Image 1 (cartoon, one colour):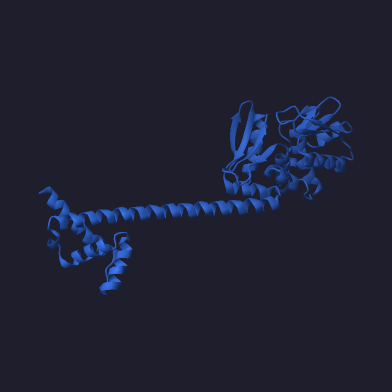
Image 2 (tube, one colour):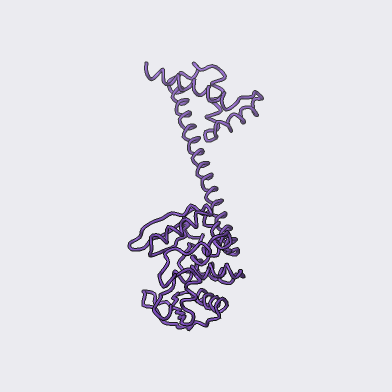
Length: 308
């Protein structure tokens, strides 16, 4: 089962109030139904969603929908669940703020979404009807909704952004996509629609991935520092050997000769490690900065001799 299907299964089983159920059903019917003269049909490929809609209509309006299951015509030939509602058709659609005086409403009336809990319920219905979400184990975080109407898609984006979810808008062919890619915002959305189990799973994976990425960045940074230390030490050794080769090593003062000999003795250690070794073995404290300045004198002498 996909992560989208798992989330839909969870939120379709929540216990909610009657007003929340009306808001949720409003979103479901609006986005999944085909309205005809004497009936409306609700079509979905998700069995849990179809069962949920059937129960909501039965509970809220005491209407038993006719259910048909057929093989779809898409590439995967998934099963389609079709609920047909003939009884109280107009009453239901008007109560759900989908039609008014026989005409389709582009945006539902505010009583469908006019408080915090009703907004959550409506977004739950939106996700159940046309939402999809990537499993957090995949390479990218992504949550999206597809709509066929521009004004309605902008209405949904504004509804999402009421919760500061930073939803974005994109036109895709003849559809309009509202999407989110920020991992924390997607986690917030799951909490908003009441998918508590899915949220725990999502956050566990998200935190694990972020910690793993942080560790990798630190390891890469550490490796880069190691590579830089090795390169620096190698250059210092070349400069020391150059001075020895051309009998100029004795031109250095004793303290600089001392660190040069320690560098030859410990060719792979960093400056910090070398300073600790010299301090321990000689009893004379020297800092990393002190070492840097002594190696700088070696470099300057080499540079001077090469330019003469």
